[in-house]
Length: 165
Ligand SMILES: [Zn+2]
Image 1: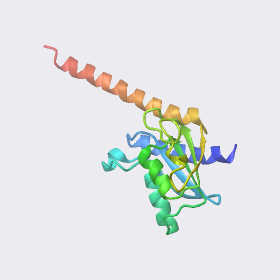
Image 2: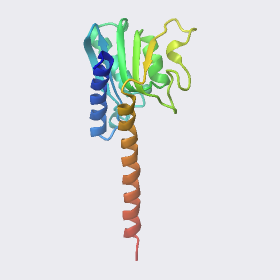
Image 3: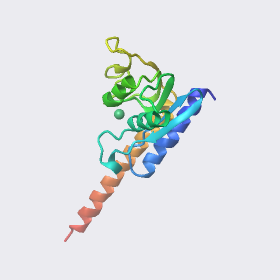
């Protein structure tokens, strides 16, 4: 297995931790010099924090771990293409490389809707590799949302039945 895939597997494991607590399954890990510096998953619902995305949490942890806001030489692996907030944090923390799994047609800012990671006018550009274990990363998300729809449907059916005379 290629190294990128191996680290993406770790990000997928993180995404599964999010799923286990009914969070949208998105996971991220930060690696530098072959060492995993931090790993995090989406905790937006649990913490009721709009910024509790996997990448933000992983960046924050990595900065704490390394004692610096500069994550030069680091690679961030994330299962879903970063949103504008996370892409911003990636640029500001000087992450060298981003590897993501599935593209995000509704929010992806690493090439899908726009490309904040490689915007020439910023003072830092990031190397981007997309589509690593894309299917697996995307399936986690589509399965999650399908389950939510099915649950809603059955809840609706139950409440409908309760209102029967
Ligand atoms: Zn984000």
